[in-house]
Structures are given as C-alpha cells and as structure tokens.
Length: 394
Image (cartoon, rainbow, N blue to C red):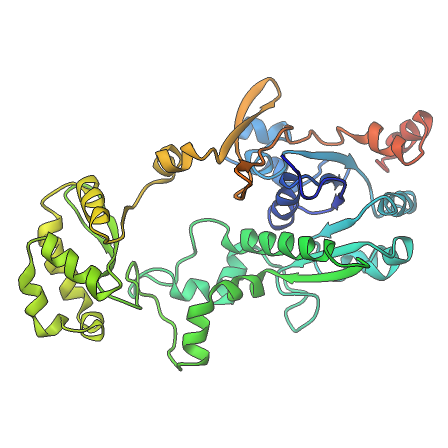
C-alpha cells in the first residue's frame, strides 16, 4: 500500500488528546512522527486511563489509544541545551505540532518566528482551545470547557436534561482531526513554510453547520431536542420490544411505507400528519402512535424489514456491540500491535485507500525509547547523549 505521507517527518510536542490524535492520524498515513516529551514524566496521558497498573508504568490506556507508530525522545525545552537540541531536530523536520497554551513556545524562545529561521519550510501547527488571539486566548481549555463554550452542550440532551456533554472528548478529537487536515493541506503547498492556528472551539462550531446556519440565516435559536431529528418526522429514536432503534423516515414516501408496513394506514389519513410540517408539529404524538406497534416485536426484526422497504433504520448499540458488529469488524477498523509482550487492540485509520486500511504497525513507545537513535542521528556522540541524560536535558 502506498503511504501518502511517507518521507514526512513530524515533531509531536503535544499532550493528552487533541495534538496526539492529530499526529496519530499523520502517522497512520505514513509520516515519521517523533514524540518530544519532558524527561521524567512525558505526556500526561501516560498516567491516564482505566487501568491503574498501566498508569503506574507510564503506559496508560489513554496514551496507548493514539500514540502507536510514533517514536519517543525526551527533552527539557526550558534548558538552553534543550532549546538548541530542538532547533537541530527542527532542521530535519517537515512539521511541528504543539498544543501548549498560546504564547508558551514564544516565551521559551521556540515560537514560529524563531523556528522558521532554523527551517524556512517548517509547517508549524499550534492547537489550542480558543486560538492564538482573542479575549479567551489565555484561558485553559479542557474538552468539556470547549464543549460548553462552543454551544454544543446547550443542544445536547432533552429539553428537561440539557445541557449535557457529549459522551466522549468531542472537542479534542474534532480539533485534532481538523489539525491533521490542515497539516496535510499545508504539505501540498509549495513552498511549504506556514503557521497553522487551530482553535478547538472553532473546529467544533464548524461541525455544527446546520445548527449554526439555522440561527444565522433562519433566526431559529438552537435548542436541545433529545433524540428527535428536528428537520423531519417521524425521525428519531423509537422503543421496540427489547431495545431502541433509530428510524429516519425523512421523505414522504418513506413515511408512507413505514405506516403501511406497521399496519397503521389510518395515520396516513390523519390531518395531524398530512404534511412534513404537520408531522414535525405533532412529532411526539406520532412517535407514541408508532411505538404501539413497534413495541410488539424485537429491534432486529424491524431493522431488517424496514430497511428492506427503503425506510432507513438502525439499532442503538452500546460501544461493545458497535465494535462487535459485523459491518465494523468486517471492515477491519480494529487491529492489534504487540505492547510489552501483549497483543493490544487499537483503532487504525478511518480511511480506506484503494481498498486498504493503514493499521498501526508499532506499539506506542515507552518514554524516551528512541533517544539514542534520534539524538545520534543529528550528530550527538554516545558520550554526549549520556552526559545530557545525566544533566536531565534528555
């Protein structure tokens, strides 16, 4: 399989999730990613996750999830020797990604204006909560903070339960994927040197396109609607005999096919449901009417039968069920790598390219695992590496 980013070297100066996820996507596309971590502790994610023993060993599950196929070196960027070493490493790189608070790298004397003198072709990607300028620029930005400030929590949940956070680190992940997209685009430029300012909050707002446009263009204030699709009805989550299903009868012909298949033709003659707008206005009564029949049989029956007649339907699965589902498992999204004598399952690239999916080939690195190889590559002798290690520079 051709690796589209083969030959590209990325310096990953990031921590926890947004930046590491960005660089993991670049690694899966074939880039050489060198994770630059602080001596003695490294990425905070090394001590995060559901397994306390792995956390103690500095290989927490949160770290494992998005750091396969990377190399790790340690470097104290606050020391003068460490700054000099980073500049030497930058000379060999195509991309640098960091997710410190805005201004941190400048205060260290390692900001873009300094590093572009070292390497004019460097693509420098700064990921932050709110961007490199603006009144919130210096505010700390964890995922839930960004979810709240971006407005996404206000529309998540039901009217009587919102605001709710999305059940996974949405802002971190969307911010990281946005940064990977931006880096990939910048790599296509000639000459390459550029500064990329990626704000997690803006990345999230950008994904809320319909919601934002309904307000900006239509003047409709976004609100929480639970599991209801506000653009159509019947469209949302419905109860069955054993587990919920999602039905999206968004077109008139789908609505008609649904009602007839359920043996509820009388609903088609009810003036409350005559048009799309009527059905939207009376969506809750319509859902209750449909559930009278849907509750009589199991979810799998309805999914099979309704899809067969052109009414989009799907089960609401738990995460373990989703991972075991034949569609996902059959396409090979989850692979395994050997981590400390153990086969560990990790997600590969979400992209299938020419019929092949790029899967992680190498385990997430132990802290500083590649110190000797990388530092000797840029010209340090074994004696110099040992001395820098004793000084705590690496």
